[in-house]
Amino acid sequence: MLGFWSLAVDIGQIYNRKVDLYGIAKAAALAAARELDGTPAGLVAARNAASVAVANLRYRNYGSGTAFTWHDDALSFGTTSSRTGTWVTSAGAAQAAELFFARVDTAGLDPAISEVETFFIRILDSSLAKVQLSDSAIAGRTSVKAMPIGVCAMSPDAAAARPATSSSGATLSELVQYGFRRGISYDLMKLNPNNTTPARFAINPVSEPGTNSQAFDIPALAPFVCSGSMWIRRITGSPIRVSELPDTSPLASLSTALNTRFDTYANTSCAPSSASPDINIKSYAYDQAGIVKWMSPNKGTPAVATTTARGKIEPVIDLPAPPATPGEYGPLWAYAKAAKAPSPVTSPEPPGGYPTFSHTDWPTLYPSGPTSSNYPTSPPVPYLSSTTASGYYQAPSLANRPMAVPHRRVLNIPLLSCSPSAPSGANAPATVVAIGKFFMTVPATDNSLIAEFAGLIPLQSLPGHVELFP
Image 1 (cartoon, rainbow, N blue to C red):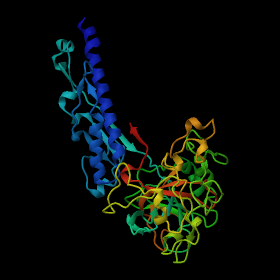
Image 2: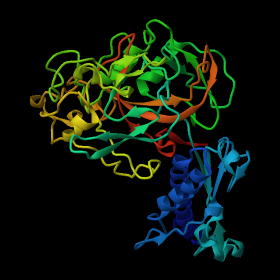
Image 3: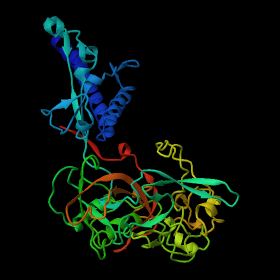
C-alpha cells in the first residue's frame, strides 16, 4: 500500500518539480540568448533578462506557489551549443565576441528549489527522504534579421548635426547618421562615398564573421532576401564576406524576392507563408504625378537626385547649394520624419525615438524644396494610413491579407566601411559599422532599390531567431 501511495504522491510531486525546473531553464536560457550581441554589455543584459524571465515563475504549484530566486551562477555562455563544450560565466570583450549560446543549469540556483521532500517513500528507504533534482537548457541565436545586401556608409561619422537656418534666424539641427538623413529616399544601388562607380554588395548569408568562405552564387541569395535574414549569429565584431553586385542590372536575380513585400510573388520561389507581404503595399512613386499627394510639386525624381560633382556619387542635397528644382529632393517623409540632433549628438536613441521635426520646418530643412501643406497629421506619416480614401494605403490581396505583417517594407541593410579600393571583387572581407533601416517606397527593379532612411538599429536590438538545442 505504501508503494502505491508513493507512486501517487511522491513520484507525482517529483515529476512536477522536474517539469518546473525544465520550464525555468528553458525560459531563462531563451531570454538570455536573445540579448547576446557579441559584447560584454550583452552578457550583462543576458543575466538581467534571465532574471526577469523567471521573476513570475512559480514552483510548488499549490496556493500561489513559491517564487524562484535567481542566481547568476546558473547562467553560463558558450561558443557552440555542445553540452560538453567550454562554458564561462563572464568574459572580456575579445571572448564575448564569440559567445552566442546561453546555458542555464538549475543546480546553480538555491538548493531548496532542487530538493523534494517525500512523504511515503522515506518510510521504505530513508535515503529517499529528500530527492535532489536539476535540469538544464541551452539556447542560442541561429540567424539575424538583416538583409544579405550591403551598401557603403556615406560618412564615417556615426552621428552628426546638420545645421539649417530659418527665415526668422532660428537654427535647426538635424541628425545625420553615417551620412544618411531620415525621411530622405535613396537609390541604394547608386551611391558611393569614394568614387563615381556605384558601390553595392551581396553578403554571404551563411558565413560567420571572421571565417573564410568560398565564393557564393548571388542568385542563391533570393530566399534570404525574401525573409530578410541571414543564417549567421552576428554580423559585426569581425569582417564578413561580400561580393560586388553586377555592374549592370545589379538586382536582376533579387528584385522579385525584394518585391514580395508588395504582395508580388511571380518569378520567385518564396511564398506568402514565409515571406509575408506588408499590411500596406501602396507604392509611393514620386515620378508619377498625383501619387505622393502630400507634396507640392507632386511629381519629381523617384529618389533624391545624385551628383558626381565632387568625385563621388552623393545626393545633390549634400552639396552646399540647394538642388536646381524642388522635385530633386525625391519623396519625403513617407515613413520617417527628419530627427532632431540630440546633445551630445552621439546620445543613444531613447525607446520612443529621437524627437522629430514638423512638416512646417520643410522650408528650413529643404531649401528651395517642395512644400507640405497636405502632409497628414493623423496618422503621423503616410505609411501608417489604413484607409484607401487617404490615397496612402493599399491592402494586400484578400488571400494573403491574414499573413500580412506591419513594416515588412523596412529593410535592415548593413552599412559597410568602404575605402576607394575596398571592399572589391568577389568574396572580399568587409566590416559592418551599423545596420540601417530603409523603407521601400516603391518596388525594386533590376537596377534600383529605392528606400527611405529611417534610422539605425542598435546592434544589441537586431532581431534574430533564437531556439533551444538538445
